[in-house]
Structures are given as structure tokens and as C-alpha cells.
Length: 162
Length: 391
Image 1 (cartoon, each protein chain N blue to C red):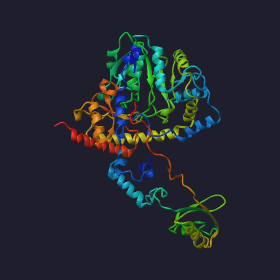
Image 2 (cartoon, each protein chain N blue to C red):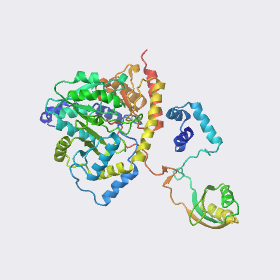
Image 3 (tube, rainbow over the protein chains, first blue to last red):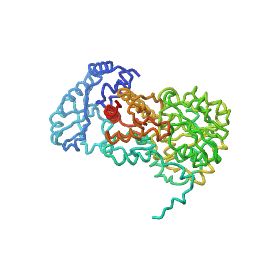
Image 4 (tube, rainbow over the protein chains, first blue to last red):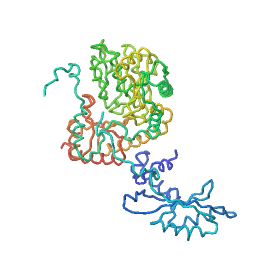
């Protein structure tokens, strides 16, 4: 596997892995790994580094909704222009073009249900190309980006064994 | 309380308690320990394997199986061994499913060893072989292997320890506790001696999937060795299934049949739930297994570099998930080193002498631990060594 891809595989689930650790695993110089990561960032292969937070545990209330959006495609650009426009709203976390009965899946976050209702009624539905929306509120998160929320992580092994 | 110890057989009395046990008690009483002292994967069994077990329970698979194990499992084992080591075993009468490899080793020793027969055990070694030989009324003969030989068994050293009473040679590669492996050439060099002295081989290959450079080679695959080798393997290490206790032995039908006879009167059969899970592991477990192996390999590199940086000599282990660094620079015995490291830095590693007397001067470090834990443990060991370097 090409070196850049091997670097990406290592940091995919652990953005905090140090350059030294990556270099050790891949038998490469640290400077080379640093250059590769810098290039991946510059080329927007790496778009950024998020933290996956269990906000419930942190004592913060918040609301997430998944909105199915039907669109009227536009000549030459199809769904792209509208999808990009929707994606520019700061409350929108993700926008996906979907196969099936609707066109876009939009994930929106807000502090309250009212925030999301307001976004849907005032911003999303009023876009000319938006034909209809169906909003589903997230009730509980079990797993996100490979992390299971409630899984007890403690090591259950005996501390010493043969 | 009445002293009942006089009723205990002299054979059992002659087996010393495991050196690991004492250390385990000590570690258990210490808070906040980073343990590199475990002998098992830090993963839980992949979900699809666990789920297959639930499904089999839902369908009511709660009964005995045939003594030798479920036929489907034996067929899967035969296919696996053919692919892995290139040796064909009949699922009908050359494979026995056991309660872990430990049971398979015990059965083999009981079946092969006459009172007074000698069992050659290359050391440092896993803790069960020598006591197993004693409990089978045999005599364990430790054969030393060395750091400078990367803990491979050298033919000239083996030959020195062979006597007219030698009957069984235990080979356990990739090796616990050293991480040493034996390649094709290393094994070839032993074959003539084994045949010349009419030895039988118990080849414990439980770590065979955890081979990081080159392919695993079994001694059973060499001409003239198939019938005199009992290949033992299981699911604990490769598929993170230690607690399921499913292992197996493959070999000549006369030997397997004799082992099955002992097994049927002692164990009856390995638990069906574990056998069902093992079938799933062999049929669909390769992808996740390879991912775990790749992760162990990453950690192996990190721990080795760490030892290098803190000045601990360690040969490069090419198998299992253990390193066996020398602690000579500390000037301490293995036990002293481990106890002090535990008390002062809350890092647990296992004294090398728990695996045989020539493990003295070394410690076993298991890298089936998270990368941050390995890195912290190395840092703490570095601090410890700086404080304790002899002037």
C-alpha cells in the first residue's frame, strides 16, 4: 500500500497518534511522515480533525436531526449547487446525495428542537429547488464513527497470566 | 484445621506452584497498574463469532458433541491446516477438539510418556509443559535456548540433552515468552536428530498466525515428520478467544485415537458453544484476525523502538505478542526488577525465570496493550532504569 494511504489508515481512528509513533510503525523517518501529513492536509485529503464527544455525558443537551430532502435537479449542475448551498449553513453537519426515494440526507445539529424546526421551515424548505423534507430526530446514539458510546472499555483481563 | 496435605500425591507435591501465580497476587494488590504481564489478546472476540454462539444457543445447541468434536469443526480444521501448514489430516480420525491447547498437551503427554521417560522442553517456555510431563510420571528435561540465537532451538544443544530415555520433544514456536520463531531451515536442522533418536514432537502452534516476517512453518510438514508430530493449535490467540477454551490436536490416527480415549473419560467433549463459535471463526474470521495481527505488529515495532531508546537490549521477536528484553543493565534479578518496577512505577512485566531458569536476567513484556499504554510503560521503565543503573 502506498505510504500516504498507510498513514491515513493509522490516523483514521486515532488522529492523536504522534508522528513519532507513525514513523516507528511504518519504519520511516519522522520528517518524511510529517511531510506526507502536511501534503495530505494541503491537498484536502485530510479535511480536518474532529473529536467524537458523548455530549450527554458531558452534561450538554443538544438535538440532532436527519432530514430527507427531495430536490428538483438543475440543468448542468444537477443536485450539486443546492447541496453545496445547504452544506454552507453552520448547523448542517453532513450532506449526502442518496439513491432511493429522496435525494439528500442532511444531518443538522441544534441546541433545541425549535432551532431545527426553525432551520427547516425558514432556511431549508424555502430554497427553490427543495420539493419536500422529512425530519427525523435522533433519540439516542449507540455508535458513531466506529466508537460505541456505552461500551465499558475497561480491560477485563487478569492483570498477569501465563 | 486438619492438615490434609499428607493425602496429596507425591507427584502433585513435586510440581512447584507457578512462578506467575506469586507475581499475580502482588500485581492484583497494586492500584493503577499498566500491565504488560498478560498472556492474551487485548481484543474481545470479534462480534460475528460471539453472535454465532448466541444464535446456536437460541437454536438449542446445548448438548454433548461427539468426543472428538463437531464433525463440521473438524472439517474446517482439516481445511485450515492443509492451507496453513500444508499437511493433510483426516477429519474422521486424525483431529481431536480439546479444551484449549493445554488439554491437548496434557493428553499427549499422558498418552506418550511412560514413567521415567524424558520430555525435552526448550526453555524459556510456556509454564505448562514441564509440570505436564511430571504429572504424566515423566521427567522434564529443560533444553536451554538463548538470546543470541533468537531463542531458536539449536540442534547441537538439543543433541546434548538427548538420552536413551528421551521420548518427546516439545516445540512451541512462535514462542511464549520470547517471541522467537523457527524458520524452515531452523526446523530442517532438527529433523534428522528427531528421527535418529526416534523422538515424537508436540508442536504447540497456538501463535502461528502471529508471525510477522515470513510464513509460519510447521515441523509436521517435513518428510518423515507428519506421523511423529502432534500439531496443536486453537483459537485463543489468533481470534481473541482465550476464555472459550477451544483447541485441537492433529496427528497420526493411532495417537489421536489414544488421546481421544483419555479425553472421553475425563472431559467427554469440549463445550458445544465454543465449538460453534470456532466454526464461525474459521469460516469467516480471517479479515478481523488479520486486522488484529497487523495491530500487534504495529505495537511490536513501538515497544522494540522504546526498549532501544531506554537502553534495554532486546532481540527482535518475530512472532506471538511478547518481547523478552534483558534487564542486565539494572544489575537486578528478574524477580527483584519486576517487584521494584511494580512498586515504584506501577508497571507489571513478568519475571523471565517464571519460564525456566535460563529466563533469569530477562522479563516478558506483552505488547497486546494499547499504544498509549505501551508508550507510558516504556517511559516509566526508562525512568526506573535511570534511577537504578549500577554506578
